[in-house]
Structures are given as structure tokens and as C-alpha cells.
Image (cartoon, rainbow, N blue to C red; front, side, top):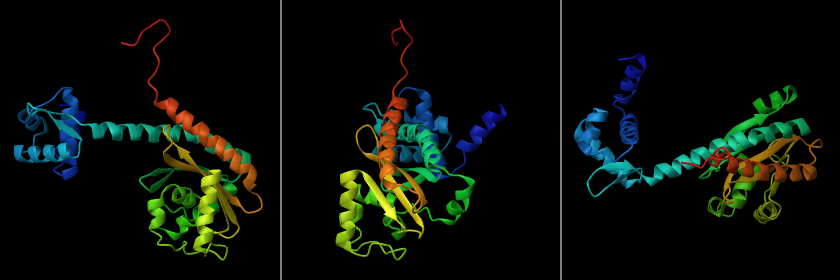
Length: 274
């Protein structure tokens, strides 16, 4: 057995719950056709009752399907996860040039993050050496419940889109992070309405004194919010009006770029797809 084979065998027999679930999915995927419980058990090398229990749970979660003959094949939820993963990778590839371009135009901190089920993860950021201390010192929150996120331009893009998250504030505006922070609930709702009307959120010194931020949502081809694109910079140096226009155009280009990256490759001229 090769070293690669030994490593694969070791990973498959790691005896963790996650390892065994992945082993079952990998075994079904490797077959390329429906596989019965006995063959599946031999393939993964773990006790049959355990394989049966894991497979049943995966069927319940639509990650596997069990046919009338009792054999298993991959389920539709895996297709959904694969599509989301491809879209996220497409988002990063499509957004990175725009993040770099925004930094080149402004000299400030340009960034893009992914939004999935309310969770936030920063994917790319561009800034110069003069802004490196600000990036290290600044807070880049990713918890929707965080007052720092709720008061930010990014948080307002998310809250303007997600009334369920807004309801969780129970009629109270976010706790102000600076003396410039919003303390009135009606005013906070007006700020969110402006985000919906303009598709852009602007925040001046409400998270860090001396800094402002402009952000807009990035959407998938179906219109769902999948990310946020923004620029954070020194107040007075960041032209929010021109930046809002640049961000909207860039976000639209990112959506089109991500959609193009998900399209299947076209066959060469004169050839038909098999």
C-alpha cells in the first residue's frame, strides 16, 4: 500500500463521529451508483449497526437517499451545499479585483465579506502600510448580536435585509460604541430605511472616532444577500457620495462575475457537448 493509501485509510478509521459520517458519504460518492448496506459496511470498515444508523440519519437530513431496493445514493442536500460552496468560491474570485481596485482608488481599507444564514466571515481585504495599524487595532465583528456590528455599515446592510434579526433587538437601538452612535430607535429604523432605499449604508464615527465606512450588499443571481462590500477610512478623506456609486457598480459586477464563474464551460466551436 502506498503512503497516500495508508493516510487515506488512517483518516477513514479515525473513529470520530465526523470521520465516520464523511467515510459513509465518501463511500457512496465513490461508487457512482446506488450501494447496499452490506457493500457500504465493507467499504468503510466500521460495524454494520453503526453504518446503518449513520446512513439513516443522513437520509433524514437529505444528504443520502434510500431507494425502494434499500440501496443508498447521494441526496439533494449535498447538491445544495455544493452549489453554495461553488457560489462562495465564485464570490471570492469575482470580488477580489474590485476590492483591490477600491483600495487603489481610495487608499483606504477595502473589504468584502460573506453572509450566510446571518453569520459573517471576512473573505478579502486590501489596504496600505499606512492603514495596517488601523486594521490591527480595529474591531471587525462577525456576530450579528454584537452592538459593534449592529451599529456598523455592514450591520445595517444585514439588518435592513433581515427583519428576523432586527426583531431580536426588541425595539432598542444598538448600544452606542462612541458619542456619535445612534441612541433613538425611530432614528435607527430611519437609517435602515435609507439603506433599503439607496442600497448603501453609511456610518460616520459610530464605531471608531475618526473613521467612517460605506458598504453595500452583494447578491447572488437570484437576488439573495450573500455578502457585503465596503470601504473603511478616515473621516473627511472618504467621499461617501462618490463611494456609494462606486460600491453599487462594483457589487453589480461581482454578482455578474460570480454568476459567470458558475456557468458550465462551453464546448469548443463546432463541437456539441456530450
